[in-house]
Length: 112
Length: 111
Image (cartoon, rainbow over all chains, first blue to last red; front, side):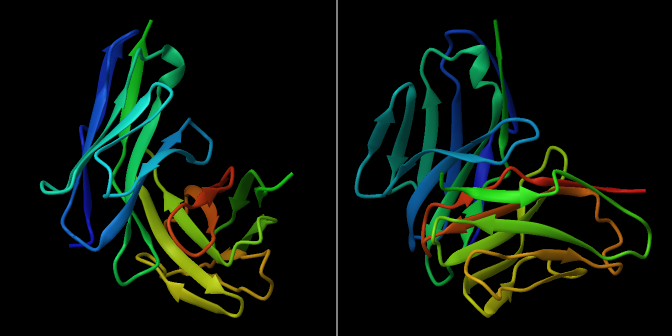
């Protein structure tokens, strides 16, 4: 119940494409869903986050879509660039613990 | 300039040796966390602390120890009992809920 399942494990797109990363959860007590971006050898950095009372949030080229009934959320990267090549983690917060539950990560490669 | 600092960037451990990783934050956050990241893998929680002088085990606490004597500091000791310590260690802090902010990490290698 505490897991967040993330897919795909890796993803290759051409420059300008729209990679989509999906996450699913079981615990309906989760009420905050951030996405993190991590470059090799660096710490993860917060990219964008959403609460379940909205179905979509955009920040620049990054969009989160949220489907509360399906308990799924996804990250879309519009007009992807080689500089977006990184590992992306979804996460979920809420419930009885004060822990952020992370997905297993998606390694994205954007080819020029 | 607020943020989280970790030191050293690289750390080498000899067999049987205890080593301590430093984590300092000036964000005035109550909660701090330690994660371990292995190549191509996600983040696994080692220990976390929600308030000074209190901390809880995470999912993989065996072979590690922590202290939280000051709000700004949350050092992690990798003991000789941790038989496979080679990994990238990440410290994070938060206001107690939701968003966690990460430091730059420490890479631990075994000689």
